[in-house]
Amino acid sequence: MSDVIRRDPRAERIARNRLHPLHQSLVGAATEQRGPTGLLRKDPRAGYFMGPNGLRRIDRSGASHPGAATRVQRGTGGGVSTEPTLPLHQVENPDNFIVCVLDMVGGRLTSHDKDVLGQAHILAKSSAQTTAVTAVVFGDHREEALDKAGVDRLIHFENSDANHYQGYCPEQKLAALQSVESQLAPGHWLFPDSIHGGADLGCRLAARIGERPANHAWQVDSENTICRGGSDRIDIKRQTPRILLLAEECAMPIDETRHEVLALDVEHLVTPDQHIQDLGAVDVDPSQIPLAEAEFILSAGNGVKDWDQFHDVASTLGATEGASRVAVDDGFMPRFRQVGATGIWVTARVYVAVGISGAIQHLQGIGQCEKVVAINTDPGCDMVKRADLTVIGKSQDILAELLRLYKERQSGVSDDSATLSDKTESDESVEDQNKEARRVA
Ligand SMILES: Cc1cc2nc3c(=O)[nH]c(=O)nc-3n(C[C@H](O)[C@H](O)[C@H](O)COP(=O)(O)OP(=O)(O)OC[C@H]3O[C@@H](n4cnc5c(N)ncnc54)[C@H](O)[C@@H]3O)c2cc1C
Image (cartoon, rainbow, N blue to C red; front, side):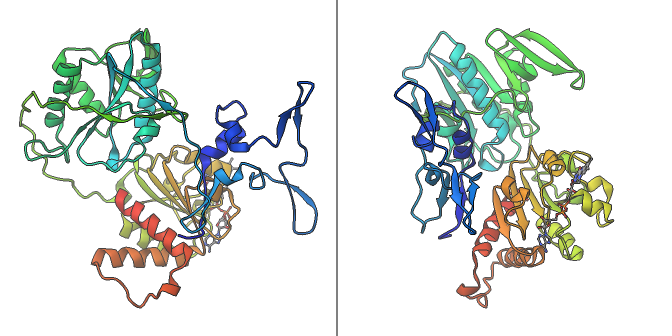
């Protein structure tokens, strides 16, 4: 991954927002300066570059901008890699805790988890006590950005012989939460109101400790909470309770501070009831999963030329198939597979767009997707701008390579015939994508 250019969408967002506290550190001082009379002066030459034919062009990417180096980074070989250091938020000797029990699907923070942590900080700010936002994580996790997500204290219940937190084990988790309750007596308990365990665990804890939780809460302050009810048709206002099951987008995630993530030890005081036995996951045919609920979608557009290959890749990777409107209108995919403004709005954790240009109507439908991977021949198309990872090349070649790599990994046999020189930049990107795709699958 030597010279792959990596964009930093967060830094770009800060660079566009003149009111952001880190704005100046990213853009440098050159474009706007306060003149001797106190007036703000703009440098009209900044933000332009000379095009290949000698004409002056507006630089919409910001690449020629003084702070561009912080927004565009290169891989290990490129050298430039300066991320702005965020101010550290410290909480010393807290006398109150707001405990967030995170879903951590696949061992990583979900966007819902980040919203919950954002909401916890809103409550912490309005508290009269010194409050630490405390995350509870069960079992193994792979998250490295807990500090940037707003975790002041971390209670990590690790797997041991006595306590195992893999699979469906609400009784063990509930016992652990009861131990937290008895030792910390948190001011609030926050759970993501999700199908990934948050809603279930939140309700169990509320029943066990005799609290009445607020479900599907989407506007919360220290006094009042507004919850969605009646199939999302009505709002119910009530006093903010101790246990909150929060809806998605209840608050903005933390993105302007770093946090300490100091470990908190909690003793296991409560022995779990052992009534539930997890017999493991049941294989589900990905084509039977409704698009709106699918976690991993392989979506086809007008750039897909080999449809048999596309279906083959989708079933091999265990992906649910989606499509652009053009693919549907041309009769290659059924109407119920259409993603977008006039199709289905999807919320996949990984959305792979194969040969889809990224028209606004399509992008509207994937706004909630966590990671978007674009496979396209056009590096300038809108889907590439939206994507977290892009592979430039013909869909037929990339899908064939993806399939080859997947099968190779499955069989555990490395194909020695693929020489080093065959390994292109896009091969590496495909490997990344393959890893992510298989992780979710
Ligand atoms: C009222 C209205 C509602 C709409 N609603 C929706 C909607 O809900 N959903 C939706 O998707 N669209 C919708 N559309 C249509 C939308 O505007 C676009 O026309 C459509 O999304 C384009 O589909 P596409 O990206 O597959 O095709 P194209 O725009 O033709 O793009 C094809 C892409 O494939 C790439 N490509 C070509 N060959 C290859 C190859 N060999 N390998 C890899 N890449 C290749 C090209 O570079 C291009 O980026 C709507 C339009 C209107 C007017």
